[in-house]
Image (cartoon, rainbow, N blue to C red; front, top):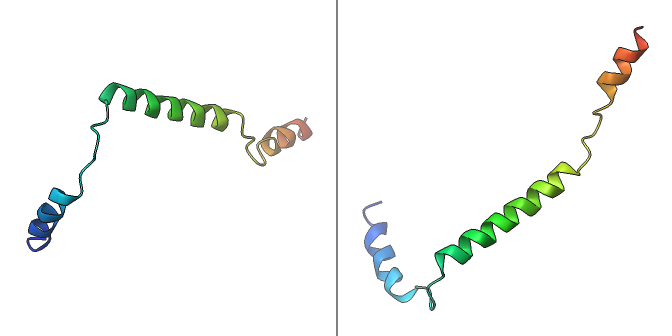
Length: 60
């Protein structure tokens, strides 16, 4: 770990973002992506989710 830190600091001088990203826009983009993923997760069917209910109906 001690050998890697100086190398990473040296590389950090050359590898840096060209434009600073605005924090507010980045937060909104991440929020929009999370909302889209949640919506797709809500509408994804769960396999074999009705098996338990069907078994309970058959016991009557």
